[in-house]
Length: 129
Image 1 (cartoon, helix red, strand yellow):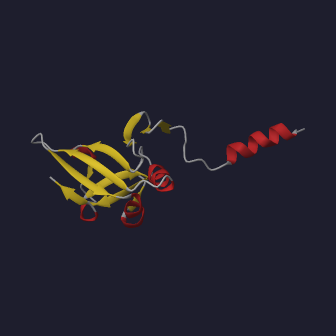
Image 2: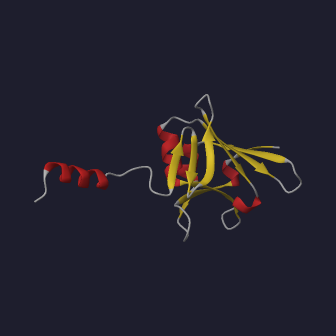
Image 3: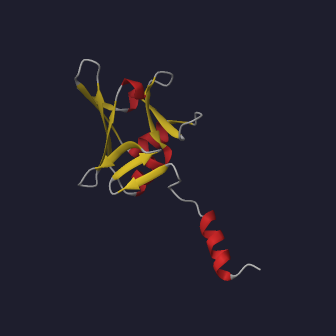
């Protein structure tokens, strides 16, 4: 027989969560499969991440963002997403956008072994060198 506590535990497991066993938040930092995704700034207005050439989607001509991460950033009112892109020549380029643009203009993809992601084409970023 299922008691009230058993039923409650079952219902709790069925709730939709923004986190799963691979997605984790520690303070203002986010991880997927123990890989650092980036962090929210102290002023709570910007999400900051670092990328290299290996993170660039040639097929889509853009950068990918974890779908659940974007949901959280929108919910928390993050105004800017900033990528510090480390170029081969040792310099950096800043790519700046916002969570809403990523969700609305990005292409939602799911490749085997990776999380569901929005890939945003470079044309939707403000670029600073």
